[in-house]
Length: 255
Ligand SMILES: N=Nc1ccc(S(N)(=O)=O)cc1
Ligand SMILES: [Zn+2]
Image 1 (cartoon, protein in one colour):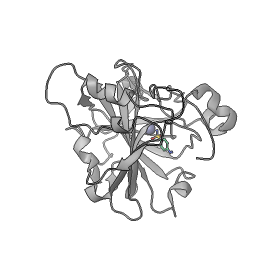
Image 2 (cartoon, rainbow, N blue to C red; image 1 turned 90 degrees about the vertical axis):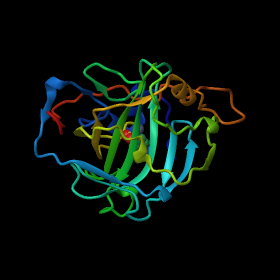
Image 3 (cartoon, helix red, strand yellow; image 1 turned 135 degrees about the vertical axis):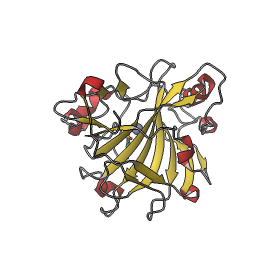
Image 4 (cartoon, rainbow, N blue to C red; image 1 turned 180 degrees about the horizontal axis):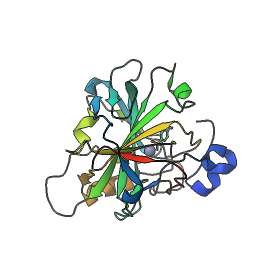
């Protein structure tokens, strides 16, 4: 994007005034503030593996980009009024296994957080959708490190694209293989967690984390912020701290 920012979240508001808004993300999710909403519907993802296009390291995260030129891979149901098109997925992670997620659940920080970003096709394009309160839906899945050698979820690797700007074809990939067993979720209205921090996101956060191994997390940590000819800066801790919840309700699809 034309604007330049670095991972210093407390500085963002100087160039991006939304960052000090009343509906910012991520937030802490604490059971005492959560309201069970029996009217919440289950959500459904119908993804076409053929929509997956490329995987890249943009210096801020590892991102997989999908064809969103029509309703090819969509998320619907849950709190959403209609279908939302899958545009990209990316990750947030820490410098060690004990932190790295953006949302924090009852004081628990996970090693990372996977975000599947969808936009509302009632708007003409993604950038227009980002200007609308119902423009974006992010499905968030926590990454939990397990030391035991239980079967690890297969986990897409982007270590190949160590250096910023590296990208490669990433065909025939259906991200729903990453989903945990349970579809239980929390939902609230918030923002994108990187500048310009627009308050356009319906968050759908899965209660059940997916299990990854420590060496899979190490692969994410082996990515670099820098390009080939620049001094090496490891890409770690690309998560925004939790923001004030103010008067927002967090609803749960489960008791
Ligand atoms: N460039 N656009 C973005 C969209 C969503 C997010 S997030 N982390 O809120 O899913 C970040 C950046
Ligand atoms: Zn994200």
